[in-house]
Amino acid sequence: MSYLVNKQRNILDFALSSLLRRKGKNLALVAVYTLVVFALASVMFFAAALKKEASLVLSATPELIVQKMVAGRHDLIPMSYAEKIRKIRGVTAVEGRLWGYYYDPLVRANYTLLVNEKTALPEKTIAVGAGIARVRSAYRGSTMNFSSYEGKPMLFQVRGILSQESELLSADLILLSATDFRRLFGVPEDYATDLTVQVRNKKEVATVAAKIQQMLPDTRPILRDEIIRTYEAVFDWRAGIVIVVLLGALLAFLIFAWDKAAGLSAEERREIGILKAIGWETSDVLQLKFWEGLTVSLTAFLLGTIFAYVHVFLAAAPLFATVIKGWSILYPNFRLTPFLNVFQIAVLFFFTVVPYTVATIIPSWRAATIDPDQVMRT
Amino acid sequence: MIELQHIFKIFNAGKPNEHVAVEDVSLTIEAAKITVLRGPSGSGKTTLLSVLGCMARPTSGRILLQNREVTSLPSRFRTEIRRKTFGFIFQQYHLLQGISVLENVMLPAYPNGDSFAQLKQQAEKLLDLFGLLPKAASKVEWLSGGEAQRTAIARALVNNPAVIIADEPTAHLDTKLSRELMEIVAKFKAEGKTILIASHDPIVHESPVVDQVVDMRDGKLMDSGAA
Image (tube, rainbow over all chains, first blue to last red):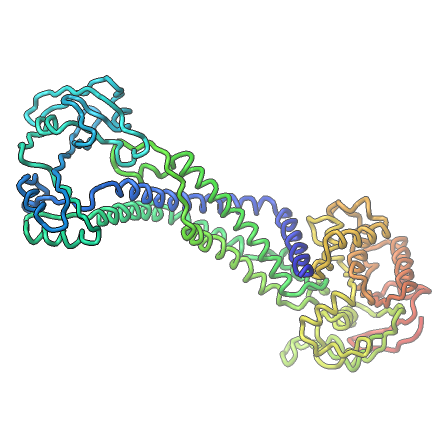
């Protein structure tokens, strides 16, 4: 056992001093390699953390939402529908929600306006998301002016700024009272934007949704799981776009790495010949090249992954944030909760470390199978 | 004792550029003696050394090392024999550039699986023997010709081989250094090592320490005799 360990340690020791001999070449290689791993790992970490974040936030949303459809478009839903749905067996509560969008020409951004019955804000007061607070320089006690559906000005006092924790989804959010909402958008008393339905048994949500669809054919029930899936698909899609953009750089690196790793210089060939002549076996030479390749690729992998972690979770990913978080003008400003997926890291490891290590071994294997007596002739 | 029986080494056999480098060589090399292969360039000395040192297989013929047939062994075993039984001193030294003198000397012993500290101690002892200890940390490209050669000799000895094979060891040395080399070789002989040298330098084959001179020309043995 100690024979094997000592042997590997000795070969590794020589591999390291061998790498140091070509400091310039190897440092350049590690730098470029690290950059590629960093870019890929950043996108992967970021998309995964966002999905995780979104699913955590969405887990608090209702399991089932019912919207009324008119000509394939979402329309206001009469509260009388709530009564009908409430009669379905298994439904424990049905509530109308009021929400909508408001375009603010001042900052050229869309806000999401929502009535939250739980916070029960007094009339003419609002609570705003941190994104809005930033762009409108709003603070507790300041006022914000809105224009109603009739074009009349409506003045609101800011009663609070929404917490940073959920900023991914609440950056552009404004909470207000139901009365103010109806006054601002002209929504009649007996109408809501949509309905939230609570079902006693979670397994029956899909059945209840089917019954609603049957009873009220002009409605569209939306399951929470579907929303979560949609969010995941959107984040995946955005991450995909970034990766496609990075693909050019990735290909350039592959060519560069292949050239550096696969092409043995005459000097390296000569050295392999000398090692064989002084008693190294072909397998010893391959182990040496394996350690060399692994040192370069593992260093780059670890550095790239650590830099990506710092970039995404400590610095809030300034390089990709605008693409992956959303297209809105009010970019959320928040720190993601570190979330690492072992499978993801394994995939990254497999696609970065393994090909490079293999690429270094194959040409060495070809060189290592030559007869050692070649050395005697040079 | 090494015994060569009807050794042939033919390059590119059966092709128009076929070349017979060694032809029907039978030879006995006594243990703990110095044997010199003498002959002009292209006479087959180096090829015979590499066949003898398990670096290349003969096209035909047998080699017995301590009465053990080694020509037909798989290359793994031949590599092990090469590493443990033979120490090579090449004409061009073939030291690895960019690493230290100490590392160069330790290199043949890495696959043995001894601890690094043990290897280092062994290599330092050899460097001390050749007066190279102060240069242990120097890179080999900074060495003078004589120092480089002594480093190559130390490397050949690190696995404590029974046989030392040297190919034109004085080719790059002046007269003084060549004589010093022969003094070192005499010490090895006194320690019981078998030494095989290919050389056409009179300082080598006329040296009083040499026991046997074998003349070669065109791949064949001329006549051999005691020096």
